Image (cartoon, rainbow, N blue to C red; front, top):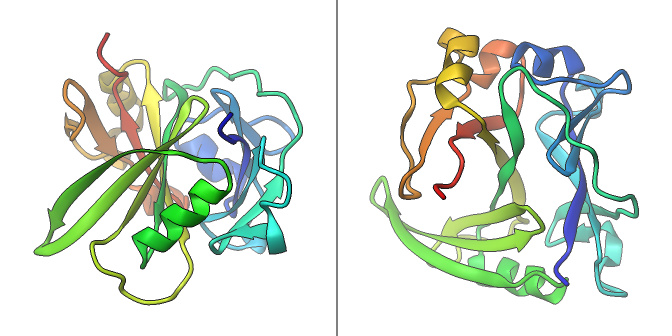
Length: 212
């Protein structure tokens, strides 16, 4: 059994995510699909600060981190999804960035994740590698250079949400959302939240559901 995500901790105020069309519980938690996003406030920092994972192998969490990603053990059942004004149904994928793909892949696999596939891309003239893992209903997308670019830790980069109707999401968010376009995934469209305009520190994209 692969690990699954109990919670993602973000250093944002709840009102910023509410402005982006998310329903926020009184305790500062967004229930997006089966995952809780806990909004810890700006005093805690910025961006994604860490996550809690279930079903980790015994001894996998040495030092409270996985290749530099702050990690705790999650032991709660999956959350009940909330209804979000922006139409978010679930977290489609969590994006991680690393300077050393092989090292981070090895570390993730040692904690129970299994690489599903790898995609080789050229971003602004730089060869890059994308490797995908599954964590329950969520995909983990690891991005990094083809050749190691240093010995720094892996970091959390951003989130993508699956929404019920991307055009309705665009109508709700207006200028806070980029124009929807075709996604890399065949049959899907994507739009990017202009998150800084709303006081959100995490890069967020919204995507149409996978074609049936």
